[in-house]
Image (spheres, rainbow, N blue to C red):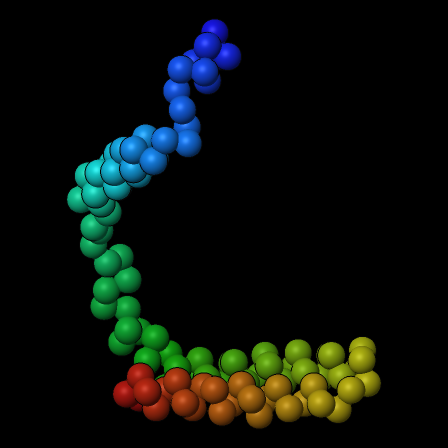
Length: 100
């Protein structure tokens, strides 16, 4: 049965390929009406900003410093300590652009 169908349908036919593409596009357009959702994280920006202005930034510095110290003990690579500076600069830039 499969061989009969393959002989009857010419899959190299450009009209068949165009029709299949149009059907796929129409299905995607119809499905796209249902992709809109409400923002579940709306209003959490202020929480993050308050945390990062308070003790959140200090805890991130402490955790990064501890991780850098442990990695230095394991690898004996002084370049690892530059991660503390990198994280500090990154946090300050993020807070600057976040309006904090």
